Length: 326
Image 1 (cartoon, rainbow, N blue to C red):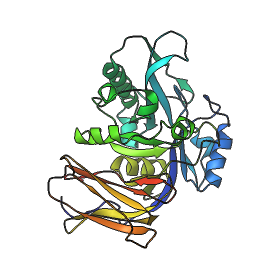
Image 2: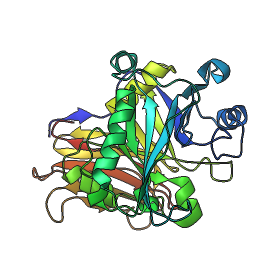
Image 3: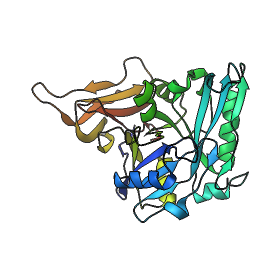
């Protein structure tokens, strides 16, 4: 891997939550209330991703210091009965409105505000890859970029969704699911995706339905400005990191070593593929409580390296992976 810096020299940092629900689906707060709560907490952008319903409230709620990303959460679910509570497995995808170029190229045109797309439901039997791919393709045909959400909560296996194509990122930390029933954290499937060279980014989000399950998972995006085009382009380029607490200031490859600089943490992991025992972890020296930087010497056989930093409260920050192609 050649020397690279994963963050750009230009740009400012913007904090955002890519996954939440309001009264336009099953959330407890009105959209205006939700936006104002996140703005007051220091967030710069928010995606209101209602179930099966596309919303675009930019004209009503955008401000100079806070913007909305239009989108929705779409699903395909297999049931053991036709009673909704008995969902056996489900795919949940975010569709987020893409760049202006993606919008112009949308084969099926763009969704309209409050458009309902319908939930895809199956009874006892389904082809999970076919069901998922059809939905991914539909979202992309409408000018969206697509995430795969909370696999542990969804009760899927890797065989159910890792073959999917056209995914931009996987939700590796879902605060609401982790807060509610310990099913929100998943880097096992994510690392499998990287070993399969899927090229997916990783992101953390709240998936909050109120304020009780909010402000626990977010992305920090380095973009040229706080506008839809620049934020989305930075996300697509991977110019961001994800966190439930710690901050990451820099990471990359220099002189044959992967390095990271961060806020005080108690452990830094360099997770690597694709050989057994690749990677390593760094802890504070004896007698010290924390570290703010670490490096890992590359062996030359790593297909990817990603970094995660854990603070004294157990909160984590995650980088996107570095590969030979960056």
